[in-house]
Length: 81
Image (cartoon, rainbow, N blue to C red):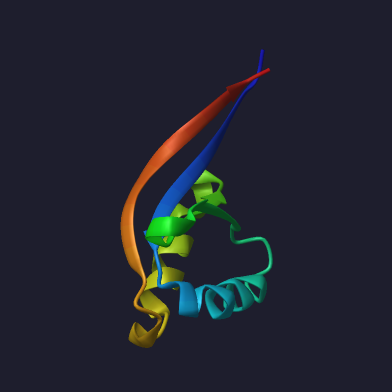
C-alpha cells in the first residue's frame, strides 16, 4: 500500500485581491493548486507536495504586501491507497 501526502497551506486574502493572486500563482507552473475554502472569511487553501514547502513559503513571502495575504496555518493530508 502506498501513502501519498499533500501539504495544505491555508491563507487569508481579501476578496478584491483573490483573482490577482490566482493569476500570479498560475505563472508558477505546478507550485500549488488553489482552492476556495471559506469565501465568507476570504480563506483559501494552497495544495502542494511536502517537498515544495520551502519553495511555496519563499514564493508567498515574495508577494507584494498590497495583496494583504496572511498565512493562517498548514496541515498534511494523507491519502492511503
